[in-house]
Length: 367
Ligand SMILES: *Cc1c(COP(=O)(O)O)cnc(C)c1O
Image (cartoon, rainbow, N blue to C red):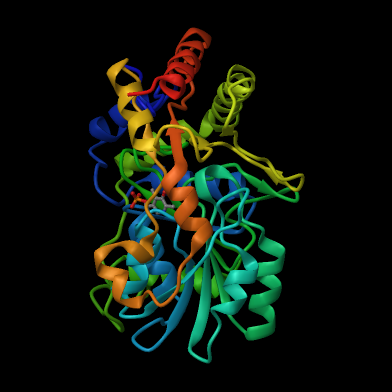
């Protein structure tokens, strides 16, 4: 079986984890946490990085940092992993769904602009599957309407927009270190920002709202969203090899580009001239007229190749359907016709050729 993704733990991971156990610093205090935060800030090229329990809690904190609550509206692309939207609901605020850009699947700035109302407080831009969203028009829109911008960079570690790393462009960047992400800690997350006041507020909220100058005094209601030293130990080891890992990961994407180039009717991933796409998951679109996406996925599974459907649009999910007063045709089409192929550092040239051959067959078979 060829899986969609597989973590690579080939560096100092086991040595650092063993160090946590032998030193007994296994909880959320320990030197690996600050080292991982410092190294991650350097990786993103920003001032502050705050480690948390996962990417979803990072998103929740990013909104709490702006005091988001009932009555507030947050613009978010419908075509994203559900966590980007759920975080808005956790705050009691209302997600307002924007449509996607045709080529990258990312939030369409024109559609985002049409979502603005007097209640809009911010925009969440998601760098879908590793391709950065078109940030300049979004940042300009936000400036004009006095909105904040959160980057959901959970799928885009090391990606760049006009030479700047994702997570350093908006007011706050959010990362996930789930097992299938480009950098993993098993479960884990990070917030990045250049704003010292926002960083301090996030640190307060992630650790039960305890006054840093007065133990067990809690001026606000906080959360336990802390990362453990063991997770950070894995993260630090991952980070030591991140640039090489991303290079190997991209080499897989380039091999797919060649292997799939001749197959008629499939759209390969696009990289905008201003983007460094890290291609977290290699995503293709099947043209109308080819067998349905789910049939193609079943045929690939029958030959031992795991694939994933592109995310279902959030505005069609049961908890959010009541908000739907419009169609989002591009998000709906990309979701219906798209699939993610196995993409990970360690996938061999032979395996890539096998995926390409199986895909070719799956597209011509009729039944
Ligand atoms: C993975 C992911 C998250 C959530 O991260 P977890 O660590 O699984 O909580 C959020 N947004 C996007 C776009 C993701 O892909």
